Amino acid sequence: MARRLAIGTAAVALAVAQRAAAYDLDVHRSFVDQVHGNRQDLDRPVDLPGAHEPEALRLEFYDRALAVPGFGAAYGSRDGFASADFKEFLGLAPRSRAFGFDRVAEAPVAALAPLTWREALREASVDPDTDYRNQHRFWRGPAADEVPLDALGKAVPHDPRTLWFGARAGTPTQLHAHGAMRRGGSRSGSIFKALTSPRDFARPPVALGDAPDFVQTYTDLAVLAELRRRRGEGGEWMVLSYKGGVYHTLEDLGNQIHTTLVGHPGFVLDAKKAQFLTALRRRLGVGNAAGGASAPRVSPPARLTVDQVEDAIDKIRLGREREVAPEVLYALDKLPGAENTDAVHATRIISNHHFLIEAFFQEEFGEALGLVRQGRWGEVKPGLLACLRAMRVGDAGFETELRSRLGARPEDLEFGRIIAEELVERSSAESKELFGLIRTLSVPGLRRYDTFDTELGHRPREFMTRTAGPEVDRIFELHAAAFARVATAIRLWEELFERRVASADPDRVVAALATRQLAYQEGARQRREAYLRGQEAQAQKRGLARAGASTGDPARDSAPDPIHDPRAVQPGVTRSLDGNLDTGQ
Image 1 (tube, one colour):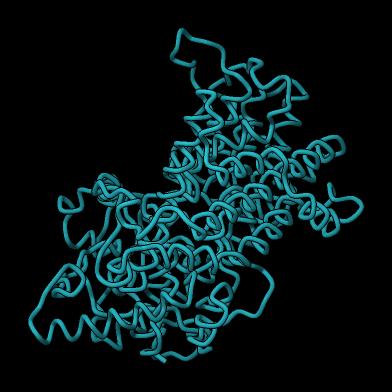
Image 2 (image 1 turned 180 degrees about the vertical axis):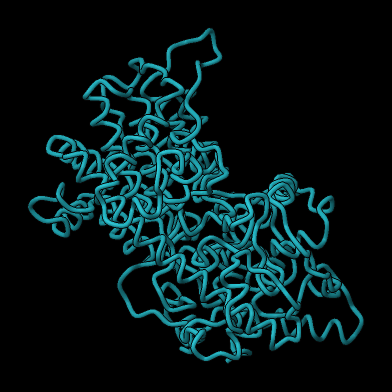
């Protein structure tokens, strides 16, 4: 089991999103312009929000949530429900400075021009990428200035589920909130599933990614903010801020490559070939970036402070990893060095192609937008014109499917989550084809040892064997199909949002959100405990267990040894020796 195909979710899981979002920021902003192109009030002024508005909404949420069983016991006072607690409760990074939670819009710089509805929503639709609200969610243990470490000396995630469809630190950690796999189908972590139905490959074999739940969370917050606005207790900016979270997440789920783990079976075979060739090159003494020596062994840190983590994350984000202490990089899974496993090669190969197709399309789409702004429509490539048209027209067939799934009174359902799940179902069906197209067009080196990285000044067209032809036309067609579905999803969401607000009771809105998040937090706690037990077992097997290693939880530190005491062991989730989640499937 431990040595079967090691494409584990923590390794591959779109480590691919290290710098790129599902769509470029300008693509996200363009959805506002195109989807709402027929509105007459796009440029009407929106009052700037007061700095107190996020706190006022949070405290109203707290007061109403006290009626939900279990909430008061978890959060005993208003003072114990600060902004960091609210964000953590909702599944966001508690130390982030997120718009709508900690920050509000400021006056536009250009001559203090009024903030318009269009600009407010355009910027809100990119905030989830730019304010880091979903990244590196570490457990806040008993010591306020420390990030707890597991038995292997790794920083403990608040919810290990973020490792299943993301990573421990950096931009990849937001994939759990910006991507998702289909909720239907028959999932498996077997090599057979990876080769025959990659959109259903998952390890562990569960529906990875929380993006549909985040759509519903933003929906509930937007409803609550709108109800406050209509009572004269808040402004429209807060509503638009939470709407932007809905838009961004739906748009990300429209991107087919955000709904799959391995993408295409060819990548699995590419990784195996690279592993074999790397072993051969090492035996022959031929080194390169991918086939060189593994990283030197580093002793785990004795403790890890919050300041160390935040400083490391800032430097990693700026490409200055060399300035971070090796033991800190180790704790964050950022220590450089290429181990010769198929997981390492698969991560690089899938990352290459994820980055490449995004960079190529964004470059093409950006050039098309530039031509449109100059009125030079005739020079825009037909496939890109189709993308712009799709944003305006939508997908009537997809709308019919959505309305059928939602039924007669969709405003009474969790319609945000349902719309998102249907979008994932359709997007994931095209993920294999889209990845296959870019694999066909990429230079051979990207399927072996080379790396495509825009941060290194790489241009996508230089890493493609051709940039025109039927494969490129099909890439544009698939993007247009995705854009049409996203536009339909957003318009239907807006319709149902208005219907929900018209009949919503704020107590019921808060109760639904609080109940859902309390259940999520309990699940996160159980997954965290299972993760810690698994790490302890793995450390024991490797002979790496440190005497007196602290988990950050005094109760657990004094508990019976979970490795030797069968009463303390929870079966079902462990970690295999190759570091991949193993549920015995």
